[in-house]
Length: 253
Image (cartoon, rainbow, N blue to C red; front, side, top):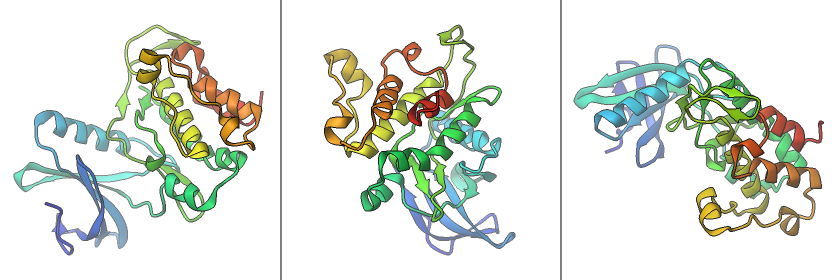
């Protein structure tokens, strides 16, 4: 059951209301009475050792990061019945899905606004070890009133031990170019209103991704070409890193 409004956690965080409810967790808007600021409190709703480890891993990863396009975790605690919580910056604003539905940005404007997400991913992938988000989608990007994109929901994120040499995988782990594929699919969906066929369906059925320019005549050849390369089924056929993908979208060669 979601926490009641006015519930106080750790004698410090006063719940105002439920902000978002998912199958695995709940996010509340709360007041930090110690610091006098609004915060988001995330609650783990799943029991079991593996779910608890995953929730702690999400909090640990976010607590180690400092970037203007990522939320910041400031506290973690466990209360009665082993309920887990962590506290992070409260990001107010619509998801990218909601914002594009109301504003219909041009392709170039969309790519420009998403610049902060590219920067955040470059930062994540440059950590030691690299951090891979693994769940980039329009609903996991929030826009502030100043149109600053914030990448949220690190429930699937991993620190990877992957080692790469150029475009060749030479070690185990999760390839950061999976984030490149997911971001390309996100941009495709935001431009067309329909996500591209997922990779498993493409592999098993041979399904092709419909041309962007048949749906959006204002999409430039360079944007379509960059997106289709980033959506390659083989990681080695994608761009070497997320910044190379960004530069290709913007025609910066």
